[in-house]
Image 1 (tube, helix red, strand yellow):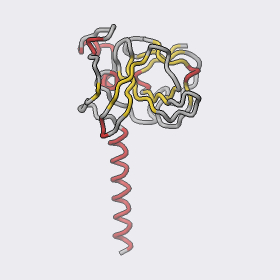
Image 2 (cartoon, one colour):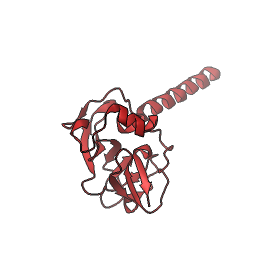
Image 3 (tube, helix red, strand yellow):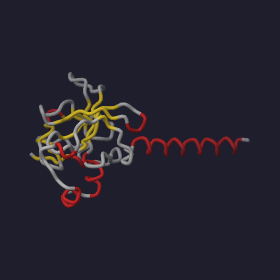
Image 4 (tube, one colour):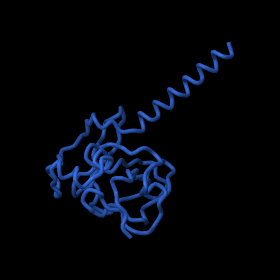
Amino acid sequence: MKFKSEILLIIIVITCGILFVNFTSQDTNSKPINSSKKMKDYKVQKSDEEWRKILSDVEYRVLIEKGTEYPGTGEYNIFMEEGIYNCKGCDNPLFTSDQKFESNCGWPSFDNAIEGSVEYKNDYTLGMTRVEILCTNCGGHLGHVFNDGPTESGKRYCVNSVSIDFKN
């Protein structure tokens, strides 16, 4: 009987791990995002072929297909240098190092964005309601913003490292 309980516990742990990975990874095939703007409505206009030439496969999946990098894997997750974080797709300045904080959520976190640099869209993917953040210049997907930040703003801009580029 003890052997069966141990096997059952192992199965439960493995199942929870699989569910965690599935729910923390953005499903790039379903995009029911409440958006009035299409990629063609942004200042920076590129064809799919042009985007693929300037972005790596992972950058394309995140910025264009609205994917998510795995938690804790991004270059800027625990990076705390002074400078500006720009959009990887168009070099639009998005965040300053003064806005960055350590959230221990697995992605770079900011408490605010540079005024006018980020657009907000309701996102209903993965059975959740979230607020997606997009670059106002090219429409590239950056991540999501949540109302659980520890600073005065109360915001946590949870950003994919592959969607931004740091300049000091």
